[in-house]
Image 1 (tube, each protein chain N blue to C red):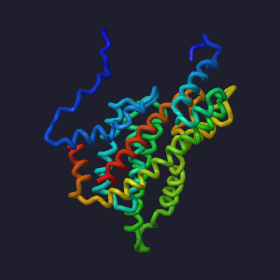
Image 2 (cartoon, one colour):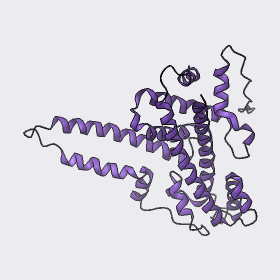
Image 3 (spheres, each protein chain N blue to C red):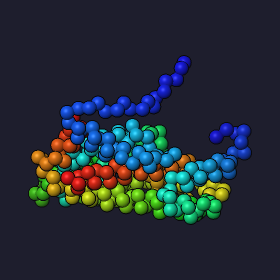
Length: 214
Length: 86
């Protein structure tokens, strides 16, 4: 079976009455096209990144109260990164798992709050202090990455390989999901993670320039 | 991994991965490390690079949130976002 070429150069944007539309999209996602080296993200994935991130930003703008925005934007940045990158990568899966855990925590916290509020009258059924304590311990466990917690449950990090330098531990802590990888995959995943981070930072920088230039 | 090899990743592969990683680091550190590509130094550079990228994401998130709050629904930026996502 002939293999189709999946990477086709995108067609040039057709001239349209609103020149801002295309120009902005391409500028936000692809401005430093000249700076692309051997390891940088491809431009279709940069466009996808822009799409996901901008969609999250629009949602945040309309739904999130102002004081919590910067944290939420930061989380949106990491989840856009993880959604656009290769889903078979360990760091991608680790990040997406964190997102799921956080979402579950949020809904659980909402349920507990409701329970505590409804159990306010002292004669009611004992407001679940266990539930409260349980939630608190969950929160602290989810403070570290869920992957690290799972790794500890599995009996510790993988044995260090011969020739692996001591610094690899610091790197493991920085790359999501790094605590479980072997040294060789750690290097590979790190390279991929760095490429995605660079694309994300580029995108955010372009957006900031765009919005503050107006 | 196949049992044909000695059961360990070969040094060549590791060196290749290390040089690939080195190529990603910003120019300034690459020049310094031109010939002294010791793995440990490279890992240290990579760690500090990743940390600086994380810090940049935090910083840019703050700036974006500040910029967004100064945006109202009729400003040109909001229009841009809307037109991009239509």
